[in-house]
Image (cartoon, rainbow, N blue to C red):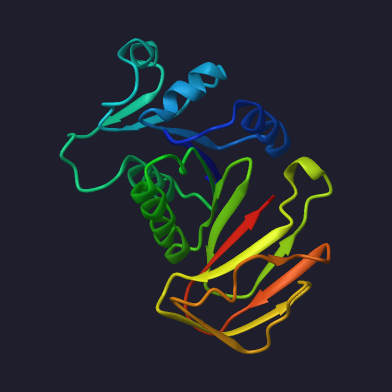
Length: 218
């Protein structure tokens, strides 16, 4: 299994997710993380798996999927967030690519946690991204090429690079407005914020550490 979609309970723009799903094509599996089921229900998309403590999703909506989707119910006093559980399941299912919608919302602690959760995907060689209308977030620990979309609706012009580890060493940038050559970025520095991708293909090389790559529209 290679391509898995996760929908969590944060902010999801219905028009954006519809257009993104049309562009992305077929998924090998779809996972609803708790309240994310409500968005999938609104879109009339049947998830293969539903995970979480299920304390946020409507009882009425959840009942529609009993016997149709595989439900993984956890105690409300669990050790992991619903998005973390969903991503771990995706990895267990053999994902090579994971897209997560609804991982960003009003709970700032959940936003940070969901970004950090992607480290498990990185360690298992899974290409994982958190995506919404305004941003695309991923973690990298090796040379990566970023391709800008030809379609303006899905184009993220600005790119910010922030260290997830204490420091990220040996960063070299090509195809950006502001270039770096063998640079070290450390936590607490803002030099990596709001760069611009000026070429269709841009590359980020690094030698050591984990880097957050945040692409933004505005």
